[in-house]
Length: 478
Image (cartoon, rainbow, N blue to C red; front, side, top):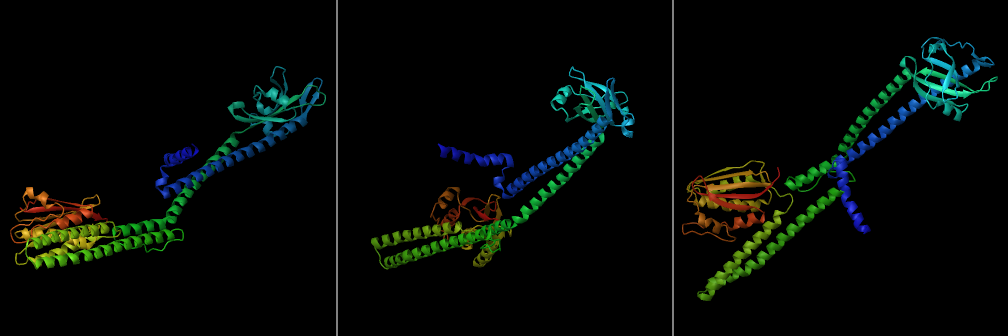
């Protein structure tokens, strides 16, 4: 049960990562940038919170020291007598100026949970400092200590107020000494500091994310180069990975080259086996045909006929084995235009007495994903048959289909082929021989090699009046 649960959790983990991080598993670049960016955002957010909090705490601490100092001055200036309390003049211009922003007061607990002001600074202009409902209880619990709180003062300005419960000689009941200061300027400074800090951290974060992006792009550049080289090998533009790479990636490039070498060795070994098998079978068959050809009678004729069938089957399967081996080799790319040009020139010379004109069109960048010899054999048979059966004109056009395939269309202005015979002409190993001069269509080789490469051939009517053969083959990437 534990293993099953662990396996299930492991299977669902990539989906969770993909849901939260935009499927980074599909891109190493995206994963590195996402992880670094998230860490940068978290680190800078914590840094901003710590800086602003510490700055605010520092401001409040300095403000508390200032208020405590004011309370101490008021305590020293206060005296108690049987008739009441009095506060000597405190030479502080700010505390003497009405509504200046610096205030003090001396009060007493009224026994009902409230505070009653006895003496106030001239700056209060007859008003009282705001007192929270629970101040009386808090002062009793923290007797002799200072309690600070925020409140709204005269003319609705924000205040920072400190209060402390103390006793004086000559008075049994303790007094509440209070001091307050306008914190408008302090709040503005705090907001400015926070704005500056967060703006600076935002700029720093964006700069770090851009730096991470550039670092990842530059750091992964060797991987991109290796990817491009492997792509060139697959497209047939290169035979091996030849670039120089860092020590972390160099073993990967070496393994790719070893894989290519192994693939090539395997294909060469298969070709050698096919060649040896062809030689081992064709020689005895040729001897049997030669011996049967020197004699007459039912038995030699039967032997000759069956031997020819055997030879045809051997050629057929050897050809398919050779093409199948080549079809999966990486790096094979044959330009269509070059092969068509060579075949057109050669066939126009062969059929010079007939005056055959071959008009071919193919993009220069179009390539066949396979060996040149196989493409020459496929197109050569189609073009030769078209020249044989044409009156004078043969037209060939080639182009990509956009699906990793290409189409080659071979047409002529000859008599064509009846629809009822086309299916038979495309049967495996079938040859359509006619009584007219020539060896006929001879499509068996074309069908075998085309199927070996995963393609197909279809026959139809050409607008030139003759036969149209449409060939679909794998295309190499440009």
